[in-house]
Image 1: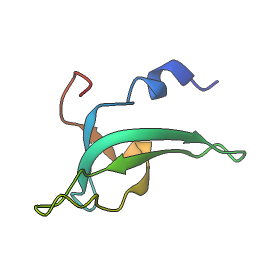
Image 2 (image 1 turned 30 degrees about the vertical axis):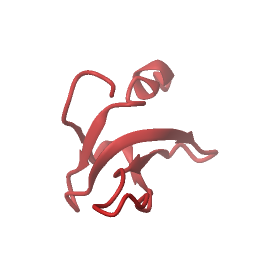
Image 3 (image 1 turned 180 degrees about the vertical axis):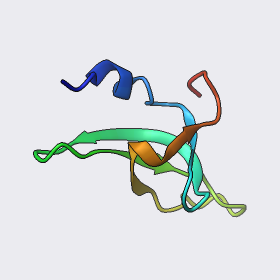
Image 4 (image 1 turned 90 degrees about the vertical axis):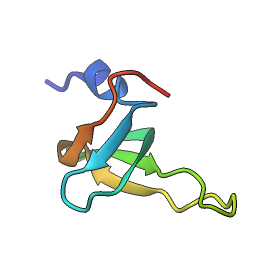
Length: 70
């Protein structure tokens, strides 16, 4: 059984993808029909104040960088 609350607790946490090194804040969690659980990672704004693209990552690839939500 999936522990949904454990995954939802990632919302707002700063994380890093272990494979690509992409970092940002977990903005959304997705539970799909086939059991994949993914998180949308928001990297924030660039130096010009433009919002950067968000990407989806499997939660097993994520390393939490801060225990507190932003």
